Image 1 (cartoon, rainbow, N blue to C red):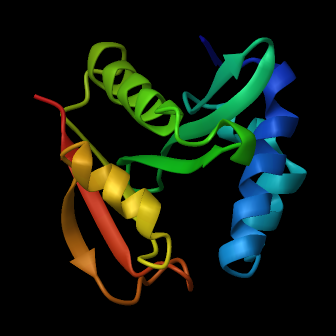
Image 2: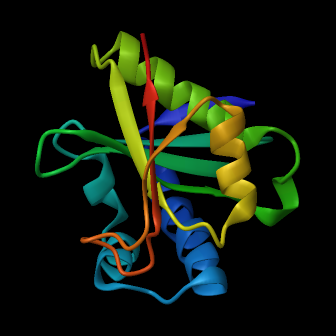
Length: 152
């Protein structure tokens, strides 16, 4: 498996994989449509898109993005259905966590999700993320859970 960061060859797959799960589980919000139309925006101004490749095919993606408050969010993680159950999500999370700690010097990152995606929530908890908020989210209509990971 190869992991690439901010490689323009991966931006379309980042958009496609994410819009697929969003449509399957939720409805597309304005921020999702923007991500789909402009995936490169997730790899600008210090933000990062990570892609896991198997045999030169993008198997999974995730982004690390700084929010308007200066906090860093693990966001838009997706694994292609034909590559699921191989630990790719966990590898991507570990990659982001390591990058955040060693390259950015962060001691904490967070994520926002929805409990309808039970497999993702199980993965986050298994990787020692802790719940910091449950219930409606002020920024994303579909979000009902926020979690964080301390990197120290």
